[in-house]
Amino acid sequence: MIDARLVERLVDIVGPKWVLRDSNELHVYSFDATPIVQAFPDVVVMPGSTAEVAEVLKLANDHGIPVIPRGSGTNLAGGTIPVQGGIVLNMTRMNQIYEVDEKNLTATVGPGVVTGEFHKTVEAKGLFYPPDPGSMRISTIGGNVAQCAGGMRGLKYGVTKDYVIGLEYVLPNGQILRCGGKNYKDVAGYDLTRLLVGSEGTLAVITELTLKLLPLPETKRTLSVFCTSLVDAARIVERTISARIIPATMEFLDQATMRVVDDFSHLGLPRDVAAMLLIEQDGPEEQVVRDVERIVQIARSEGAVDVQMAKTPEESAKLMTARRAALAALSRLRPTTILEDATVPRSRLAEMVEAIIRISEKYQVQICTFGHAGDGNLHPTCMTDERDEAEIARVEQAFEEIFATALSLGGTITGEHGVGMTKMKYLSQRVGEGGIELMQAIKAAFDPNGILNPGKVVAKAFRPRMVVRQP
Ligand SMILES: Cc1cc2nc3c(=O)[nH]c(=O)nc-3n(C[C@H](O)[C@H](O)[C@H](O)COP(=O)(O)OP(=O)(O)OC[C@H]3O[C@@H](n4cnc5c(N)ncnc54)[C@H](O)[C@@H]3O)c2cc1C
Image 1 (spheres, rainbow, N blue to C red):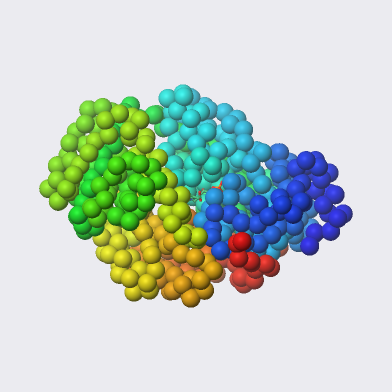
Image 2: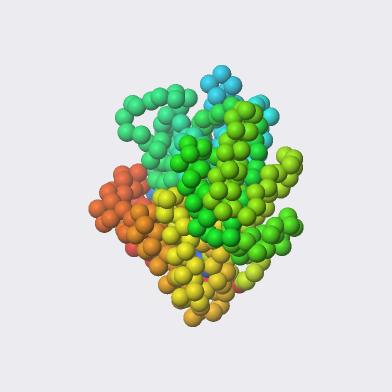
């Protein structure tokens, strides 16, 4: 519990308007997009500058108070749940785009900039920032970087870590440091920029980011490919890539997801096919036309029952938006939606999808699957009801088996959503005990008092102060 004197010190640092203590406000910050887990902070602080972040951290560090950095709270791994109470540090006031440098093709921004707004700003200048998580209309760049978010364009363009070239960050003791900058090449010392990307708020608070930009692709085309078997869909993905064509997007939706997305978005998708691939290619007109023709040939030769090309940019945007709404659409089915993140080498995609179906039947739980097929990154999503303890126990068993299968196929427990608190129990299976010990040593070097986002990623003990069920 933070005493009144410390709260007054926080008010002195950021101003009374930016310290939230009301129980309704604290309730808002007691959960994020992750189902079932919830815990209340003591106070929420919204800093407006790096200097304020440094002062808050120093105060918290001196008094051993947990600090949980937070963007928009859209993560799906419990990453912003204040499991030991303390201060939730809401970074959304630091939302300035400081510079779009058209000579160096970089942008420098505050962590609270909303991803979709950043896209619009750079695209208006003919530039392109590819990382596009499904949550991009709400998520922040700071959250994307701390989580190393992926998205639908990851296949051709990579993920957030491929675009972060410089950071300003604050250590728990209040020290303000920088790594990287505008240089595209920089090997001076250990690559702390890469280390901080994906550190999930456990090492430092990121206060400014320098991002790499690309020229905006000249044109794009969107295809919907419908298949009567999951294996056909997976083979189309494999054959396209082995034909040396790398589409910007190659998304997969199984039949159950397609139906729900269609009910939600009214696209008129067929109801009787087993799977859909949503494929987008971008680039110079001539190359896009050539690639699309070749993809259509491959799809037909691998048994696709129908291939449709979006006729207008609006139609193509509608398809992509509908795919981004898959989680929202599925969450209408039952009270609790658990979206997971099993990832395999793309050549093992069909085996993984079939295993998920088998496992959901074995445990009698409802799991739909969609995801970034080109990256082998699947989102098996379970529609359940957290009030039914017996069912939740079966869901846990099913996911345990799904992750074990992904690992046995050479895959991983998370492709883009991070470890947070919900994947901690699987981490040693992926990185080994030695890997965890090394990560804990890194954590201790940055944060010797363990105040930053405690109970997450590599925490030694997971002791939630208060985890209650959602109402
Ligand atoms: C509908 C939906 C679709 C999604 N689609 C995708 C997708 O396609 N790809 C994908 O990768 N993810 C996806 N996600 C997950 C999530 O949106 C991303 O992880 C996103 O990057 C989180 O951004 P945020 O601003 O909400 O961060 P938050 O959830 O607030 O925080 C995420 C993590 O970053 C830390 N953090 C936040 N800001 C800072 C900072 N300034 N300094 C240090 N640490 C910080 C937090 O402590 C936490 O550990 C989706 C989520 C939803 C709900």
